[in-house]
Amino acid sequence: MALKVNAFLATWSAAKALKILHLNRHLLITYFIQNKLKQLPRMGKTRNGKAAVICTVLAFVFIIIAFTTPNWLETDGKLENPKFIRIGLWQVCFQGFEDPHHLYDTKFYGCWWVFEEEYYIIHDILLPDFFVATQFFFTLCLTLLLIGGFLTALYMCCSQRHDKYQLLLWTTGGNLLLGGICGIIAVIIFGARGDGRDWMPNWEHNDISWSYALAVI
Image 1 (cartoon, rainbow, N blue to C red):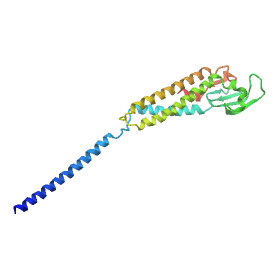
Image 2 (image 1 turned 60 degrees about the horizontal axis):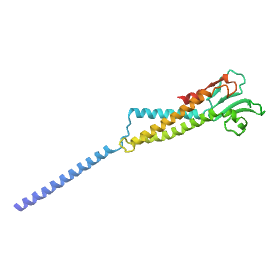
Image 3 (image 1 turned 90 degrees about the vertical axis):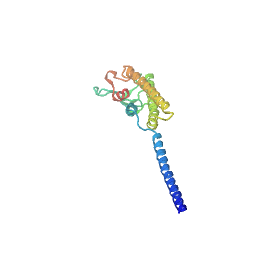
Image 4 (image 1 turned 180 degrees about the horizontal axis):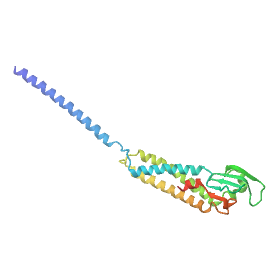
């Protein structure tokens, strides 16, 4: 009888021990999962960070529109037959424009790329130094903003606990700051010289237009 009792107690103790081990295993697994979940990247960003992302997106849209549209300078519409219609960074529209030095009898009509081969005889008039400088700095601004957009996307996906997070933040900020400086230089140059009397004909009827306004914004 004593042997049976001892055997029963031994079996019960073993079963109890196995149950405790099983329970402890579940507790360890649960703790491990919770610990790992806490270590997952935190995707939430600060309010300032989100505002900066929104501003970057808006700036990118405005600059793309300004870069591609031909309305940096245009006639005010008060002349009946203006020779100059409008110009952007890469396109110009004429209506009977001719070489003011009268070295050639060619007249230009319609909207064309500013580097069009037919314009070679008026390149010195069409592409003065200040306009080329505007093209250069604004192109650099757009290029840096494209890089900044990529870095901003990385910022949105990067955990604040990542060891490269601060480096990414400073790199993105520096890149966008440099792009902004280039854009400011471009709009200052064009704003100072774009509607001057020594560039497009009938300068008193030429006004800075909405593409330039978007570039300024």
